[in-house]
Length: 612
Image 1 (cartoon, one colour):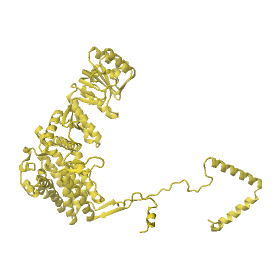
Image 2: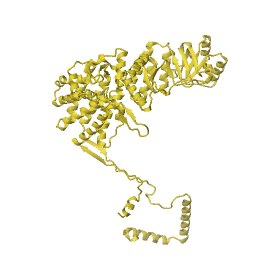
Image 3: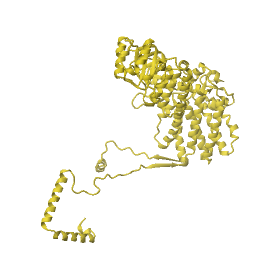
Image 4: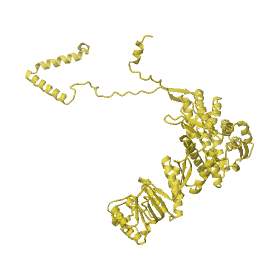
């Protein structure tokens, strides 16, 4: 600004300052100017600016909010229903024994040909944000059902769509959605109780075979394979699914307790041809301490040598003098010994060491308990019938553990399994239960092409989950017949509800329950409503077998579903449907217009300069 624009008081102050400076002796002013000049030179050498605005160096922060689109009332619910219909229609074509496949585009590889409902649902993303919100809710139903029961995701998706469709019709007509939801929740709880009364326990391998076959799309070969594997490892065992390098699908059962740790030193190898350590009738030391001094384990070595028994050391580490002494005496033939590091890390390591101690009947020598290897005696050692150690894993086959202790340990791990929410922890806890109680069966899946392999693995995964669900909670008639029979129980319960709109909620659930059976019949080329009418008039165990196109006793024919799968699908679909019915507004982001590729800052100006 020019000097004339300043207020008059600044001009007066400037004049006073100039008058004062004129009165200062010249020598003083010269000295002051010299000091100022040196200061400016010093600041310049240090890379500083002698004068800068007060705001220089400060970062200006700007907060910019993206614009949102708000959709209200019936328009919001109707648009959501469009997305729900699109996803449910895509998933619904796979339901039933005569259901079809769905091809999923893969951006970086071959397309997948899939018959698994939850995999199809997870792959669907719609362009319209409101429609996509509705599709995501159905995807949540399928995902939750898959997490809890492992199967029945298509049934749950179809059921949720029907509940939402009938419910929105009532809401549009002016009904109270909160009371409708309350009536649906009460009816669902009642039907779950009746379902538990009607369910039958799994009686043998024939029921397991039937459940696995139905879940795998009526593949009897997969059903036979799953039944054989569970018969070998027991109901608490683990079925692991892997890809095979051949065209055949096989089942391998791993006996004993497998640890993902190998021998510490290759000098412990007893079978040079296979490069493995093989020992029988082995004494086992289990500790979480590091073994470095030979004097700590010398008494145990002497006593096991006198008894002519091999010794396996499982410790945090074996190093230094202790390892050197063990290796030298092993090579001389004085000792028959091997050592491995303790598996796992942290708290999981302690838990695994306790499992090993219980399996072998050993005492867990833990630092936390104040125990020491130096004071341990032969009674602290466990016994293993056979031990096989490779460079990266160890298999311990033991019979010395107390069955009561093992059962108590399995029960404790099951309680931990019920409280965990982590997928990783669930997998590891299940493996520990399997290793303690039965074993691990590995199903190696083979196929001619990669596309067929992925589809086959998904079918076997569904069959495995459905089988364990059936063993856990029992079985009910399949083919959608159970839901049709449950629908016939609704009027009796609805009569006990006081609120009219709660009774309407019960009727909505009754109408929706017949949808899976109708769709199964439709996919089989039959008239769905006619099939539903016949099933509704039949006894509990009677239903429609879409594979043979007959009405028969489904339990006797092997057309059965796990009760847990039916229960989970019913509860999850009612839960999400209630949330949709009580929705009054949807807030979504406004899609931004795509920018023209390669358009720089001057592109608009160049376009304006062009003559058309």
